Image 1 (cartoon, rainbow, N blue to C red):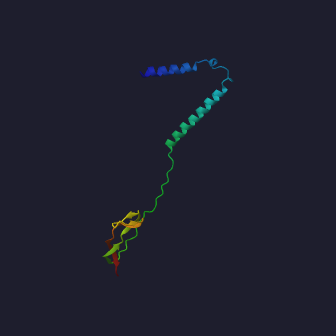
Image 2: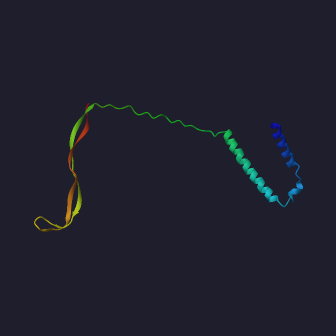
Length: 132
C-alpha cells in the first residue's frame, strides 16, 4: 500500500515538471498577475512564520510581587458597654385637605395638614464607655 502511494505521488510530481512552458503565453502579458500572486505568497508566508515563531518563543512575563498587607495590631481599651435609651421623633408628611363641610354643616376651606407616617418611639443604643 505504501509503495503504491509513493509511486502515485512521484508520477504526479513528474507530470507537473514535464508540462510545456509554451502553454503559459507571452511573458509580458501576465506580469502583474504574477506580481500579485507573489505578494500574496509573501504575506501568507510571513504570517505563517510569525505564528510559528510566537509558539516557539513565548513572550517574557514580568511578575511584580507586592508586599503583603498586614493589619496593624489591635488596640484594646478597657471599658464596658452601657445601654442608653433615646427618643426617635415621629415622622410627618404634609398633604392638602380640600374644602369640605364639618359636622356642624359649616364650610371649611381647603388647607394643608400634617399626617403622621411613623410614630415616635424609644430606641435602645449600646454605647462604649471607656475607662482607664
